Length: 400
Image (cartoon, rainbow, N blue to C red; front, side, top):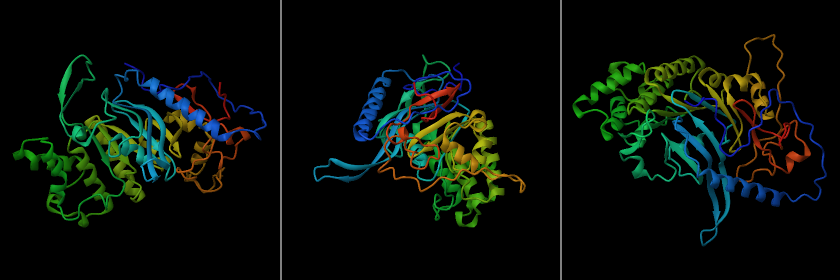
């Protein structure tokens, strides 16, 4: 079986460097540099690589594989429908997610984390790239196809085709806001049972007992079955959301900031519940959050996003021990330490995150980076592997 840390995107060059050190970037003369031509050249190269990678087979060991994923939203069109401007919410993101592990995605609000998760679940139709689930390319699946029973290769033996439940039941999401994501006019039992009935998870005469067992797993008492969402606290509502997602027996769960609206003490309860359920049900999580302490507690690997792109990716240990990208370093410097005498070397970033509708040329982070060089304003850095399983896109490190 392939090593889980072997997460190199198909299109990227690998460089073996034991201890990467910042590269001294020569201050070249860019006064006559054509930024628009360079951006077009870089985009053409990425598109060509994405097309070439379509010929490669999916990783048979990966539950989820994302290649060059893009999601653009059209902002303005001509009368004939030609796009004049677009918002690049997710721009050329690649990674693999293996059964039973947790991948944490971190970044500022507006960096594209949630849009990426929803696009993977086909709640948004991708603009480009590929999405493989259990070895099948689901990039162009329609809503009807997501709800049909599907034939797909077994992970245990790729030569044996087994009949599986609809793909929609195998991929679920836990929404960020437990207050607005539950229908106020339905009791808890009906909320959890709805998808169970629609997808025939259990026979009709067993639905109530099954729902009660799922509620028990999620720490909900039996008499909550007839109660309505407004009668519960935030933590209890999030448990209901978790029970609703797990009731259809998914293998992949996208956790979209599931604890950001909760108190710290309740956050710990929900995170511990998610970890317990993962062990009991062999779940795979894509955990989206902006709280690095939470991500460190629950994740096996971490991806850092900025303005729709992945700027650093690696194991939890390597990311926290040796953050390479200046943006990652700034995020880590903002994590509070429970010691009043500890001196924090806070890295302050100037300005606000640029608009993904008009991202900066060159490195997208150069407008806020305290270590930016002249080259960063004109040429986008290459996303490369600098340690085993540890990727970064930064001109401070060798680009060859």
